[in-house]
Image 1 (tube, rainbow over the protein chains, first blue to last red):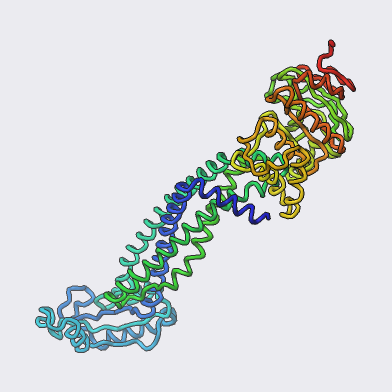
Image 2: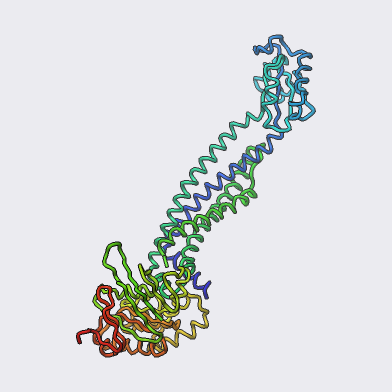
Length: 305
Length: 229
């Protein structure tokens, strides 16, 4: 009887304020979609870092014949200088961050790789072996310790430049981080709108049923019993909004990321629809928290015992 | 059943008290008229009994509970032992007679079979058998008040409060309502009725309590409306 009665009360309330209910659903839908996008962007960044940071190397480019760097004043790097560099990398405070073996790429190997990469292009035809840098390729056990290696080698005779491949990604990550911030900011604004809208909806609903709630109080219905239909009204609308947001994210990831981006730019490790299911519970929790908070605040004022 | 000990109620700071040091005792099963001009404190008295308001000073006891110290989550339990009827009936216009009475039981969580057996009984008692499916606007004023009384009495309360229940009704209809309240009183329910209706008070010859500007000025068993008569 109780459950049935509460359910019918909720049904009446939702139908009576149908346009308000729909607007609550839409606002939570949009705001939670932004929250989800922010979450998925961060997941994407995490995935790329995991994947790429394990592959990236620190490249120590050695002096070619015609470099203008002061450390290359003596011309092409000598065997003594190379030995000196390797010895520096062998020092215990540096060696602990380095994965052995250190790979050496000669000028000839670099030239071959260059020709392969730019085959058929103008660059490949004019470059010579002497234009290439020989280099040491160092893998770090901890990619964040790049600076330690760089400090030891930079300025050393025979070293033209020390380059961290991670830096190449930094700009991309910066773009994604900014996008996350933007999505998060929009989500914040929309969530605020959602809270205000839910508050207003519940207030309207409570006012339009003042006669009922007045009688309920009079005959001794408990506060929870009086307030529950209103709370559930907000919660149901917000949960539907969250459901729509999850659906939209799923479709977005499936068709935009997996099918479209995944087939056109395939070297990036993309998030998949399974990541949407990781974000989904968070969205539901936010939706329910949102509705509960706003209804508790509103109802304590409008349906006092 | 109801005891007021030196009760004062002040709504706004500095204003004249709505009730001024009222001492009163109503026993179980009594029928009491509460009379006095508008603004004399009758409604405040009833609101204090329902604990819609708290006394500013003094103590109010209802059904053995001291309302000043009663925590708010226990208020619903108190109100289940009190029925209330008003001048404006306060029925739900979109519910039938049966649904209006059943509503009072539904919202305190009574089981369906209990509602299905109790509601027809009480409708029969107030003389509305056969009109269960009518809407309030299809009923006369007297019939609407009977629905309200049925709703107030359906849970068999210890106390029935009536705030000018005949205020909107003609004398003949009022008399019918009074007979009904008298019947309810004879089942052991304490009835406390605020009224302006001198004819009814004079006719019933019950205990009369008169308030004037918040002060209790008369407490007379088998009394009449005006003290000068």
